[in-house]
Image (cartoon, rainbow, N blue to C red; front, side, top):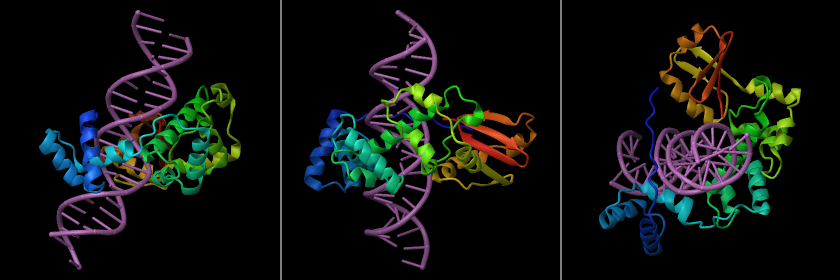
Length: 232
DNA sequence: AACCGTGTCAACCGCCAGATA
DNA sequence: TTATCTGGCGGTTGACACGGT
């Protein structure tokens, strides 16, 4: 598999100011127009999509201080109520963008996953196959733990056998035939799985070990089924 | 001081639905 | 009716700062 590295191109103050001025006059819907103006007036190439992203994710809502306890509560309640509807949750937080809300949740989950998994045996670890896992109260409790809680607290926690059963049953991705993979997990996995199209599934059938690492994934082979997990 | 792991954030990307030609 | 365009949205990634060892 060959993935091209993408290189983020940071926005300059000059670009931001130019776009803010344009939006004041023409409103925040004409992204093709904005893109053309940037190119013609400043000689900078930004796609309409990039212009919109910059405005929506950064310029529109300018609050950059850390989330307050109250805001964190609103985000977590919102996630529980609406799921991963970040734009909807962000609407309840004046001055905050959907990107900020999304980054906060992903950062929190990532941090807690690492802390919880640290030093645990494979069978005890949580692998985030989908944010749907947050629907399991015990997992939700662990993965939304506040930053202030010491890492040792999470490291000492263990999952109940009931929860372990639930998440293990969710891990399976069944291989029907060489080029057809059926997934019953969340949207994330369905997208990511397309990256496996180039993989030679037969290759996994031949492996002697039942565990195999590739890029950010861990692949297990269990009888006639293959398990693919994100190894975040 | 150097290295490494972790956390944060801006930017990029792909999919989808609605609008428009 | 169909194809293409555009904007909205959510997931992912890369760069960088920071703290611990």
